[in-house]
Length: 118
Image (cartoon, rainbow, N blue to C red; front, side):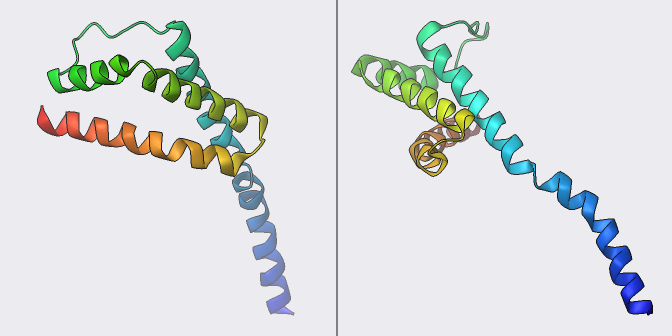
């Protein structure tokens, strides 16, 4: 009898934790989708103000080189916008994550290299 009572008590104690944790993938998908949607849209509409402090020289050179290609910045921003929409609509999520992976690697390496040199 005592093992049944402890098992039942453990099941009751775990139920609220399971119900909260099962929503995490949805919450994270929506937050990630909103971020990529907003920043991708900003790449075309420029509604987020630019920072007042100038960027480091290396960052300016890199961003300038991407802009001079004529296609790279619209491609990156368009990909972010598309991925944001796909994540928000919960459609083709594995494809969206595969599309955004190289951009995330570029974002992380850009910020790591800029922070390391300052």
